[in-house]
Image 1 (spheres, rainbow, N blue to C red):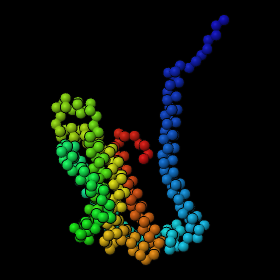
Image 2 (cartoon, helix red, strand yellow):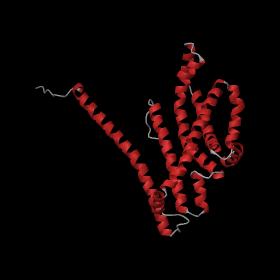
Image 3 (tube, rainbow, N blue to C red):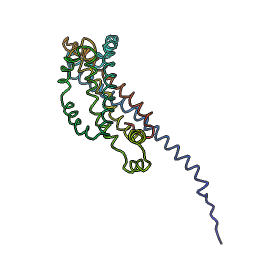
Image 4 (cartoon, rainbow, N blue to C red):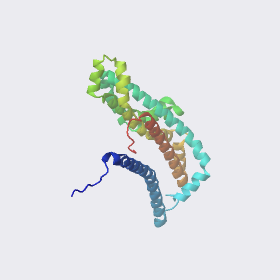
Length: 282
């Protein structure tokens, strides 16, 4: 006696299985996105709790280190003063960011096309970068005066070297096979640069730009320390001399928030400009 066993064909089960896998993949991606949003908030809340606990347990005096709630109240009460001083710092940081990175991109392009220039001037760029920012600032203030110009120049110099290094590396990170194909097609140097080198360098460039978004703010603040009557750096100096720790912490927090927003802006532009790269969450 023969027994016939009925079984579903793989073709019949295929679409349903595919839909299940697709739904599971989307659910996993949603969980990952949610995790990337929640974890920084949880980390920040944890640090705030540790800060509050240390102040409460060790009875730290307010003029040494204020509690988080005191800093929050200070931010609320002196919000106008903080924003008025943040504006010049933001202008200096953004202008320095643009100037330093554009200069680095132009010089990196020249280095890639003229190796003699790279051999002659890259060591000089390394030498200039090795000089501490606090040593460059007084020189630039003596040369450029006490206005916005030296602060922008300091922010630009801080941004310049990381972008130069990453841009040179990106422009040179072209596949030999792709370069050989362009030569076979009799492509000009301009066509090779626009269609091959430049697209290859974009991920390297944005890695440097995200670093420069934070360092440009640091450069602007350091410039204000040396000589300025306004700005986040000047307000930090004033709060320190007046032993106003609450205002000092509020000012540092204000500058840090702007730096984070600047970084997130560059990251958002990167997601749009480098759309062919997978989102790693970093």
